Amino acid sequence: MAYWLMKSEPDETSFDDVLAAPGRTVSWFGVRNYQARNFMRDAMSVGDGVLFYHSSCAVPGVAGIAEVASGPYPDATQFDPSSPYHDPKATSAHPRWISVDVRAVEGGRYLTLAEMRSVPALGDMVLLQKGSRLSVSPVTAGQWNAIVALLREGQR
Image 1 (tube, one colour):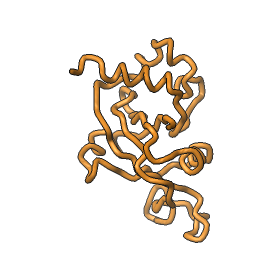
Image 2 (cartoon, helix red, strand yellow):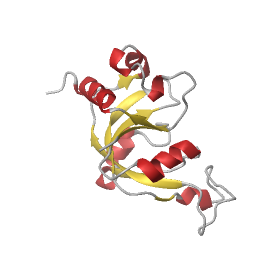
Image 3 (cartoon, one colour):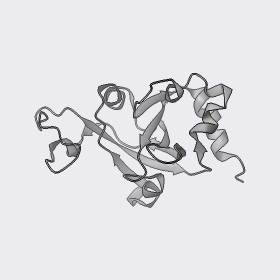
Image 4 (cartoon, helix red, strand yellow):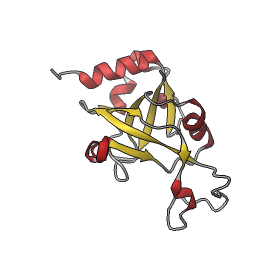
C-alpha cells in the first residue's frame, strides 16, 4: 500500500463535496502536470491512502482521509472544449491526461499547513519543500501515520 497527498481547490471540489457524492466517490480530474499524472497512472493502486488537501484557499490544509477507488482512465475534461482543462492535443486514441476515482474514508479535524510545518516528523514531506507545487505527491508511511494521528486528535 502506498500513500498520497492530493490537492484540490475547495471551491472546485471540497472534502465535504466528496462526503456528499454518491458512494462518497469523485473523479480526480484536471491534473495537468506530467509528474503528478505519472504518479496517478503508474504508481497508484486501488486502496492506496489519500490525504485530501485543500489548496489555493485562505487556510490550506488536510481536510480528510480518502482512498484511491479506481485504476487510471482518460480524464474526460481534456476532450471538452468548454472545460478549463481542455487540451487540444489530446485525442481519444491518444489521451494525454488521466483521472482516478477517490473515495472519502473519514473526516477529522482540519490540519493546517502551518501546523504541519511545525511537526518534526513531517520535515522532509514533499508538500513542505520549498517550491513544491505538485498536485499529487507521495507520502511516506511515517508521514501518513503522523498526519492521521493529528487528524484524529480529540475524536472518540
